[in-house]
Length: 247
Image (cartoon, rainbow, N blue to C red):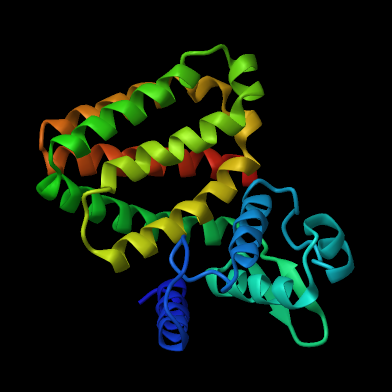
């Protein structure tokens, strides 16, 4: 089994044995509502490269930025260590996890497996309401994708959120909670790499919109094999584009 998969299962099982799950993407958040919000904000700042890879995460800076105490920060950072977004070295403290070509390839392979399995399960279980949500999320995403590149980049935050919602809508009818946890974790890991290359993908704008429509059409046609094939191609072509920027 690949290294990431082994570590991932060990981390999640250890967390599950300690206390109940609280929040996405796959593990529970710190107990308080403030801690849950901090976890989401920290993860989002790392995914969006507010903190660049390998940046040292100093408690003095973080308490000023987020307005929370060291105990809450330490708990959130420890959670992000378990998710693979942060590293911890004895005597050196917390740092944002590094990025690399080999890591991206590994993340992509796992995400493809989890996402296509979740989609196939969702197609088999989805009802009319699920279909309606898939169509609605695609429409909202398309509003951004139909804009000019300059305008789309201005609304990139909206695109990111709507892109996530579209992919979550596709798999929403899947009933396998562990599969969805792992799928969500890998989605956010891949999202971090997408942000590294977002300025270099102007030519792919039209192609991505076409791919999303094809995935939706195959999903609504209840064709799990075709939908999974299109989804895998979509993910891997995105990763290939990102690999080019990392080179």
